[in-house]
Amino acid sequence: MTFETFSRRGILGAFAATTVAAAPVMANAFGLLRGAGDIRRIRMYSGRTGESIDTVYWVEGKYIRDALNEINVFMRDWRTGQAIGIDPRTIDIAAASHRLLQTNEPYMMLSGYRSPKTNAMLRSRSRGVARNSLHMVGKAADLRLKSRSVSQMYKAAAACNAGGVGKYSRSNFVHMDCGPIRHWGA
Image (tube, rainbow, N blue to C red; front, side):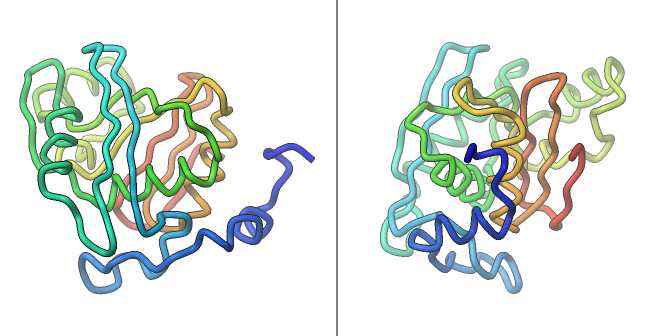
């Protein structure tokens, strides 16, 4: 059976051993963030800047401030150099999805934070860019893996049941955010 034939229930059952409760960042934030773990690590690289990050950002129920600061810089708007605080819940979703996919390959980050100027420029070129994108407030990431299909990534992120998940098959990436739970591009 391939990963793509798993149902959401099958994914959750297969990874039940790694299911832990996420620390609530705010009331009704997530409930359970499947697969996040007691030690949370994120691995990404940027084809735009040539930079990479491999950091543990959460240990035993606490975020590590220095690691979050590194993530903020890494996920900056590469066009303007601007960085803001990335919402740790977005990182939690990406890390949990990555863990569910059982791969050591780092994500390729296509987009993290976007300044309003960058978002407006991208919006003028593509209908797929939201006017009030969560990228502009540090709550979204567009990610890709060579070793997993967009469908596999989409299913893993959706299984977290913790935010927005968009499938962009033609552009070969998945959008993950910590906004309201919603899915598109299925």
